[in-house]
Length: 419
Ligand code: NDP
Picture 1: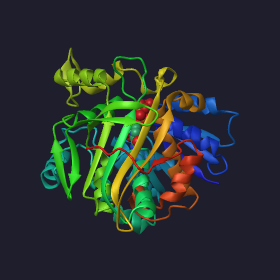
Picture 2: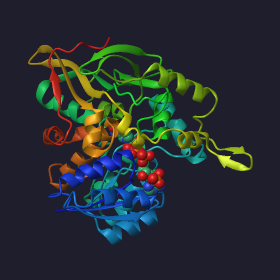
Picture 3: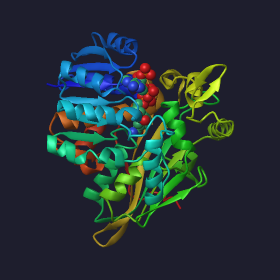
Picture 4: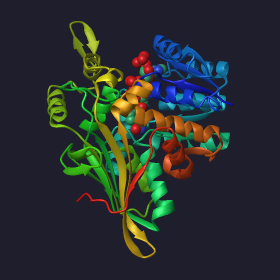
């Protein structure tokens, strides 16, 4: 029996909400709140008669702490699931602290306005100190650790697939397969085809910011930064086949380096087709990925927001995306004094996802872990207070829940390694 407030009603939230409604003995009451209430109403309407979960909807601008506080105080949830955008992480965390409610999200904080001088000063200091230049990092949310601990509350950060399940895979490898882990390679492969020359599988603004940024990895405790897309490998993925993949910066590298400090090298690779990369480079070269507002015929426009309005809505890709995703982690290390390699991954089929929840696999592979993370908090499987990433919790009940709710694991004890 629990009351949950979900903030956001986009591609990922829609899947998480549909999955929560499949577990209606735990998610007994759900409030779907977002900036555009009509989307929440449409989703609630489509779930009528299909679940015992009692669904209500609300309008909220989650950039405003007061609005979130009012909503929490009136709904009185046991947990707030932030599945809006990373820009809202801090305002929603603030509201949860004020109201004394547990918090979770699927992506770590980054500011919407990267030109804000106050933020920029802190960012530039961090770039110099830490050695990576991504706009997002955990420092902003880790700064809330003590406040959540003192309030006796839990904040679960980044509980999608990557970040999220990938860190649970690391915790699982550490708990069951290795005495010491030497290297971790996280491989994110999307073998899906939506038939468009160019579209992003989740929020275009967040996605394009991420992939156009310099790549980085951790070696012997230090960040190594490289130009965007400058390290390329080929890998033959189970159920997908041979794909080009590129080394990217990714948020879980930062927390894994802290929580599994013995690891000598951690890298993250994502597959991209040539068409995607050519379009992205062109858009970047002409300034369409910029977040800095420009004057156009008397209007102020933000180029990347304008681009978002032109691109297909990721939520509309579901019916037309065919193929599979394969996301997982390859480990090297030692067990009982012997060298060992291990690969744990999930394969997910775009069309199967669409049949089940009317969404493609990218939103599915994020929304299902969000539901399973909420399930861990609501059923008392994960109880540590403070601000935590997924690898800090017991991976076993979480991976069991993923097996059961649509993202089963596969294992390979003799994987091909990435050079
Ligand atoms: P969408 O753009 O599809 O949805 C975002 C939702 O948030 C929309 O409903 C939007 O409302 C709402 N929203 C935006 N701003 C506000 C605001 N100020 N107040 C209230 N609601 C707001 O994004 P996705 O569903 O693709 O992504 C959701 C999150 O999941 C993102 O943080 C993304 O980074 C993360 N993600 C994580 C992954 C992982 O594996 N960990 C993978 C993929 C995504 P409106 O309808 O008005 O625009």
